[in-house]
Image (cartoon, rainbow, N blue to C red; front, side):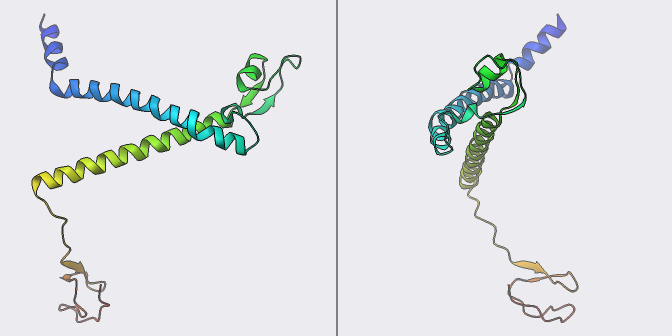
Length: 154
């Protein structure tokens, strides 16, 4: 029974529950972003490229049963065609970029809130390295006090 007790302690830890909630919310967010890409962004792109549904754009690598219709990627697959479905790939790349951007903004906001809560101010750089002797000198210095080299002001 020791293993069951350890598993129960592990599963009921706050971090495991937080992770589970994060995965559920992430999956729901991914579904919403996929809908935005598939239903809002890609139809005008597909229309501009001469097709009604961009996700059905494909290139035939090998023909299959030529008596069946193959206007969509699903029809081509059912007819035995070997295709590269580049339209669906583009949809997935755009979905990924939107999710990555949203996660970046979320983490940036969390980090900003953490700094504000701690009362941290952005760190002001007061020193830089001399490009000749690599010693630390004041940012405003025009001459290195160690090697006396002339330095352009920052």
